[in-house]
Length: 276
Image (tube, rainbow, N blue to C red):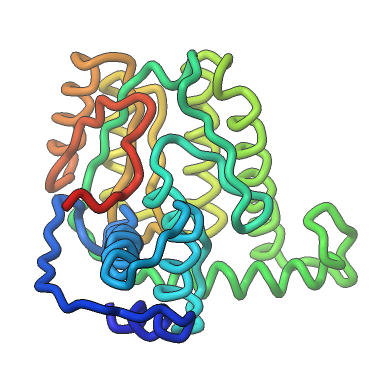
């Protein structure tokens, strides 16, 4: 919160009023659900209101990212801030602030998400820093492109990491392209491929998340993947209808999840806003 105040003052904002602010949430903390980013986005909007500053939603996301990531020199992308500010189902990239809306489409948007908390806290910054540093070193060896020829032989660990990185890249490109028209089974398969890459290539899963994944698939989910930086936290399953979603939620609790949420909002939720 204080970092955001520093950043907005540095940007020339004049905070004209004081306020008593209380933050509450149903989102599990330190679990890959963007709780800190959502708070930063909300807090930036409060500071803008107190300063008489008008911002677009993407400007809110940019200031929140500055406060949470840039201010501290931390690893971390822009996805959480953009999603919290804009809402809906988005494709973000390849540029840091490039956004494409995927909601209001048929196909994949018709189904139900089931979020499950493993109850295992995770080292978000540690995982992000490790994954970033390892891949930057590998990318340099590949000449700056993931499809490049290595300048020296890759170790077995580097080969696994390269394969996982390409799988993640290709799964995202395919899903964004096919979101409106692909069948649920195909998209669920891509979820599985992505989860497997995060687990095997980046070592981000845990035995409990794997048990939740197995239970979700056996209960009828199209797919399951860990959420956020992994190493604990949450996973998300994708179901066809309310009946299946409830069965998937129960199965994941039986497998070790401490809580589940059925998200019956196929096009996501609106972005953050000041309502008072």
